[in-house]
Length: 245
Length: 242
Image (cartoon, rainbow over all chains, first blue to last red; front, side, top):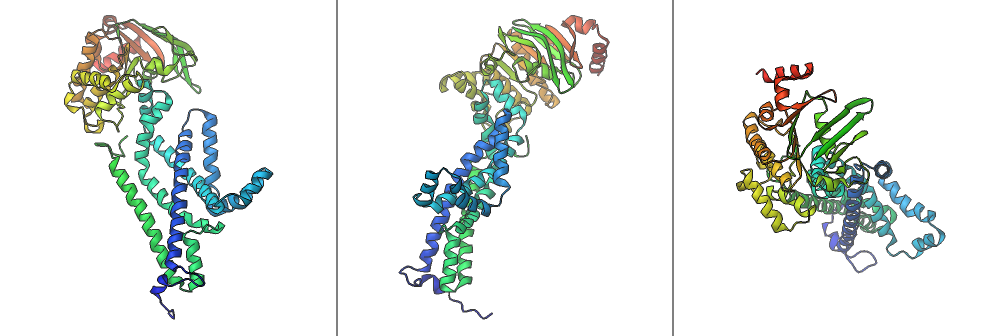
């Protein structure tokens, strides 16, 4: 291989600037974390609501929730990014449309976060639903029999157990959101992948660049994984085996 | 106390309850038995509205269960229920299982709820298990906690849906003992069970169901002595023969 290795490249100044390539990557990492974590908060709060509604006795609400899931799950994430960025603003009333296009601060970041959050909310919702449905119907009955309303039954009886059960698949989802945030580069968010491309073009040291980025993504996902494992251990129910209903 | 008036229920085309009627007076202990699929569990769940029904009505202490204006959660908080599979809340300690209903539904203070819960735990002989979790107890112990959980709400009557069917044989008696004691204290009880020994000991009346119908509704002595329907005779001969 006729490649000129240069691991020192990260500490070199970027062309025509006064910062190092490492600075670029860390700035990118910052945006990656910001997009991923904000999107995760959106995904969790909406996903819990939609997933719960999918199990609701009210047919209308259950239908609404099912539609939500299908809508965000059946279209590729990249296409959704473009839809939110290019199409949705055009569909808004004229003044809103202008405001979004001209005045919305950090427009790319907000669009990407919203898009990734909603996309992931559908996936979280499916896991929440699966968790709820894995509990026996007797648990709901027991909650109701004590005198809880249906809402209280969900809050005190069903959801606390459902969450514990779905921590492993939610862990994958939490890791995915860091990796999926890379799609945000397509609409110009200066996150890690965006910065990597920029560094590759600027420095012509593509291999070092992408290896470094790989390590950074890996570390993010790994920390997410460890965090969730800690949560799983902390919320473990004594004497409860996940497979026993 | 409990009036069941001509209730019928269908799952699609299939009729699970057909024109069932009976009354349970205050302090009465009524055992409901019958082959599986006869509708006994469905009937008992109609009493506190856990199952809906299409025709007829159930009146509990003057409140109509089928009426759309009835707040079912209120009614249920006054009717204790014990399930076949215990259904304790697995993520809560035994103490929390006993107090959460008192606190969230009845509005009792934590201290008051705890005192009441521990007293009942004492009564079912499980005071030493207060800080454990349901998964750490045996089936019989869990069912005794479930009875205590229902009693903690100071119910006006108790419903038991096959409380010993999921238990190992050696644990059945510890649960039945608690139930016998409760019956002797004058609690109004409706008990779906195959434990004919329990029925003989404490029941006032026995209801026999088959194919969604109440086939026989007789005093204990009449039921065991001279069951009128052929179906009940056959059922009794099968479960009493060994």
